[in-house]
Length: 116
Image (cartoon, rainbow, N blue to C red; front, side, top):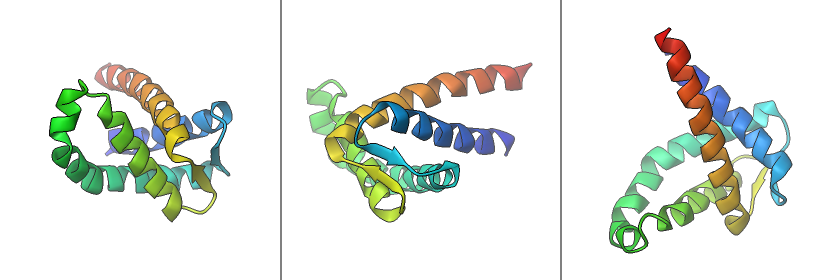
């Protein structure tokens, strides 16, 4: 449970960091980032999974690069549901790449700290 909460908080912080780096990607506050991370996670676990299965041949053909497009689409969809969270589709590609990298790096640190 602690790992889930830490992952959620770190994803929200990653969204805040990316909003300061990528132009056209905006998050109003930490509260908005928390809600956006939750909505994005839920959409990615449901609709994102379905889209990834449907576009599997194209993903294989592009050696996985098309997953960035799917993630950007889900991120844009999440921004439509959360007020105060703005993501443009193609800028979302950059944003999701940055948020994913930040989140993955921090998750490794949390996993190592959890094992200690």
